[in-house]
Amino acid sequence: MSTARSKGQGEREESLTVRGSLFWQAVSAILVAAIVAIASCGALWLLLGRPKIDSAAGPLGVPELYNGLRISLAIVAGLGAVIALAVAYRRQRFNEAQHLLAKVSDSRDSVKLFGERFKSASEQLGSTEPAIRLAGAYSLLNLAEDWAAKRQMCVDVLCGYLRMPFDIEFDDGELSYSAVFDSNKRRDADRASPKRLPVKTKNSVRQELQVRLAIQRGLAAHLRNPNSKHDYDEEVLDFWPGVRIDLFGATLCNFDFGSCEVSWADFRRAAFMGDAKFRRFCVTNEANFTGAKFFGGATFSGTTWGGHASFVDVAFARTASFAGATFSIDGEFNRATFKGEAIFNKAKFGAGAWFSQSTFIGKASFASAEAKDGIRLAGAAVVNSSAAHLWPGSYTVVDGKLHAS
Image 1 (cartoon, rainbow, N blue to C red):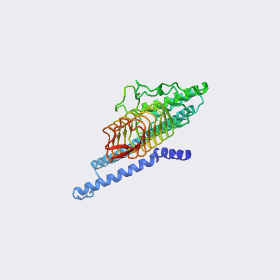
Image 2 (image 1 turned 120 degrees about the vertical axis):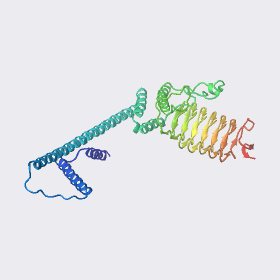
Image 3 (image 1 turned 30 degrees about the vertical axis):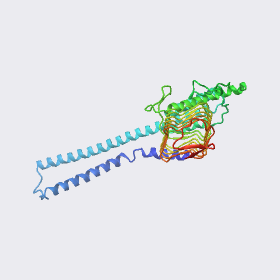
Image 4 (image 1 turned 180 degrees about the horizontal axis):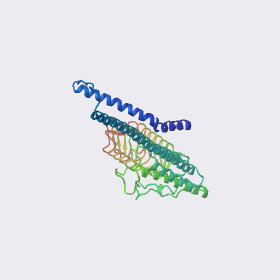
């Protein structure tokens, strides 16, 4: 790989050099000038109607010699001008080549510097010391800001770090629950004391959590478009458009991607500890949450899904809100479990909404929800049929199952 790259760079640099000697370039220029002069004289002679050129009768006089000398000097001056033009042209080509070579050299130096920064930041992320890992996370975020050509690579490394195994109890005191819903009426389970962990485990978990929170915050701050609407408390830095997010199987804590815009999003089998905030989240292409588990409240209010959005086999432990969400194609919630309230008020589906074999344990609300191909709820299980559900169309609960009447 490096040999091929060096060969390619050598060929590129060779193409930027000025080829040929000055002597032959001058001779070529004189020949071209002579050909042009002869062609011009011939064309002029034809345009003048082919006049006869009489031979001189007798010896040449002083005026004729003077005119001949003047013509000779003009020819010599013309040749000198042609040579000067060839030299100036060669000098210009040389200067341009030097400038391009300088740019190539600067580009190579920049890539080398970026590569060294990437290596250093990656090594820091792999350190056993949490403070060094934290410094590595910020270094990689700064590198992604400076190195637009390899920004996606830096993002992939940061996402890869979040995909690394991380053991934290869902009721750990560092996690924020019910900050999204019912903040003034917290449930008893939310007020329960966090599980006591051994001191060593507790400290290591806290330290690693700070590294992960820094990565999550840094990515989110760069994925918020300053021209879009966002909450006043959401950090907004220089926007990174077109970024793909791969957090397959990641353990995400107090996750907040509110108002973020990405190209692709993969959250399959991810575990969301604490509340998950995706308010006004925008995915221009496919989004996949298949098999994800939400241990806290999950808000997807006002989200925009440009492609297929999959929430198959997702488990929502508490309130899940998709109020005002826009699905450009369809939303698939087959076999999803809603233990808390499920809110789909004013949600719009460009194609269909699928809830085959899904389970509603808490209250469900589909007020003013619309789907071009219909909201398919037939066969979904309803545990608490006495709750004040708001089903779309004419769905009714019969023996704990939804049926279209």
